[in-house]
Amino acid sequence: MTDGKTNKSNALWGGRFSGSPSEIMEGINASIDIDQRMAFEDIAGSIAHARMLAATGIISSDDATKIENGLNQIRGEIERGEMKWSAALEDVHMNIEARLKEIIGEPAGRLHTARSRNDQVATDFRLWLRAACDRADALITAYQAALVAQAAAHADTVMPGFTHLQTAQPVSLGHHLLCWVDAAERDRSRFADARKRLNESPLGCAALAGTAFPIDRHQTAEALGFDRPMANSLDGVATRDFALEFLSAATICAVNLSRFAEEIVLWTSRRFGFAQLSDAWSTGSSIMPQKRNPDAAELVRAKPGRIAGALQTLIIVVKGLPLAYSKDLQEDKAPVFQAMDDLELALGAMAGMASDLTFNTGNMAEAAGEAYSDATDLADYVVRELGKPFRDAHHIAGSMVKLAESRNVPLAGLSLEDMQSVEPGLTDEVYSVLSARASMESRTSYGGTSPVRVKEQVALWQNRLRERQAL
Ligand code: ARG
Image (cartoon, rainbow, N blue to C red):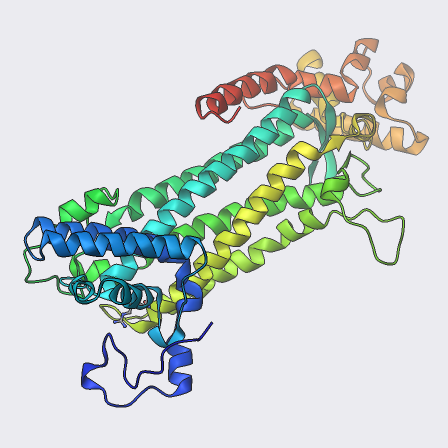
């Protein structure tokens, strides 16, 4: 795509130059392959700027109209894939300005009055990121909706809860799934926070010091949907902390997704046998005909490598840069675009898999009852009914597990005689707490796993999602 003109010096900034750049200079300098993704933001920024220049009498309204019409034409050319991008013209800003010159001639040269590419690129990038935050918001909401629907269907489904990936206590599958809904909500609010802080306009900060032209930065800020113009012109062109914040939010979100993705990998394995993915979300093996692999879940598990890598890249690019703009900052967009592409895929895949999963509730219930997952319930019972301190009760239940293990039976498989040999005060009432379901149902504390509590949370989430029109 480097069909650029081989004009000796650059037409837009080459006044003091007589030679053309070396090929490698052009190669290292050009960002058009990457920043053409901000073309529509660039056009929106330029239209707002041109209108403001006319409103303040800096250019004629006739010129502003020509500029605006020309930019609209370019937008159409880009939409139809007709725009010829040129590496010789470096970046999206100069490509569009050069095309504008071809279309409208002399007035095109007036557009850059009281503006620099430094404030222009910062403006475009903020607009792009603002839209990215909105896309992340919608994708996270769709993912939450998929999880809530499954949680509603499985509030009563019992499964083993794990700590250290060892069977710990029975939990409701709905409860487990709602955990990821809550995590996603925090991710959502991190993007919302990032959006709030980045929604300020750098346009009119010019190269670094502002401008002597009587511009109206409030007008352009408002026209572009920013909350206000940035107060310091150096800050406006120099900072990329807003992109770092976006990448931090993306990284944390990706890390959260990777944890559920890992659970999908485990659950759909034959060893666990907790769930299945349909053909839509499975892949086969090229050598082993029997295989069904959860590739999408594995790839989501891997995404933090790329997304955290993007955050790391930008942190290192920005670190130690003096004020104000330096060309290093051109390296800000590739990691952000890549991270957002990865995140969109990851969120889409997780939403898809979350609704696609079918759960083997029988296997889950069986596993929930294994490995003495009701031992805490026995200890709690001893505290409640026999008035023992929890530490003593813990010891009693531990001895009971040891005895049951030696007999190769679950706790409920011990005879009352056996139980009384450990704790004489026990009666056969104790058997009522010795099941995975009873254990799950008993945990009615706020935030606990009892289906009563889970259904309350499901209802709450259904209301929230309905308000967001996601259900
Ligand atoms: N393509 C550049 C970037 O992305 C635009 C700003 C260039 N400014 C400059 N003074 N050379 O950062």
